[in-house]
Image 1 (spheres, rainbow, N blue to C red):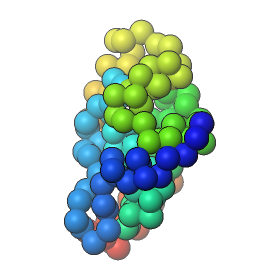
Image 2: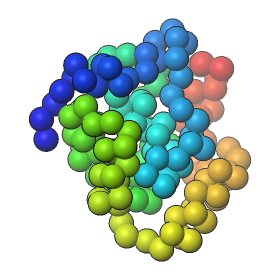
Image 3: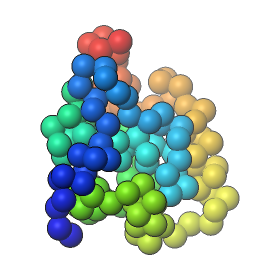
Length: 134
């Protein structure tokens, strides 16, 4: 897929210095929580506007792993300058096919998680992140 970083810039949020923030992890895109936030961070990284944020972090990996989407493929689609609607369509075409009820249940489980419910490596990441940035 062809990179179009000028188009990405038009869609990206400037996450440097608290100017803007990625969407809430609870916001859905393509039917999944965490996906919209992953898109925001990926766009920002592509145009070097990420500030303190990271793309393909453990939180992004929770969604990518559940959807069985390869990060490099996802990044390529985002780098093409795809809109949210185009990315949502791509997710629908490339995510593992699951019954809607299974996706809804996963979304709700993710929405209800507490830090103590997360895997140890993600708890450690969040602990370091909170100490440094919050």
